[in-house]
Length: 119
Image (cartoon, rainbow, N blue to C red; front, top):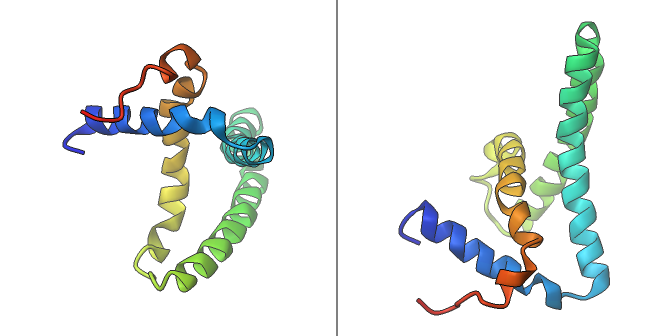
């Protein structure tokens, strides 16, 4: 892709085929996105509602991050790509932006059939 606009439309095209996924795969991907988004939303909510209890928020964040890093370390080892390892915490947090930007495309079923794959 040449720029952010092209990237956005490419991702929208890729998401448009999600309606053809098997129900169990749709469910698994949906639960993954929901748990990821829910983790960061609850972290923010805990910090706002209970600012003096920031230590518990940090512990909850750290436990999930340890599990995520452990899983990605196993995956990166299998793929023989250890260069991404230090970036996992940042990329995990930035993935939240991906959900926020592309979630509307999931619900835009009218346009999904009109997406063009060749440009």
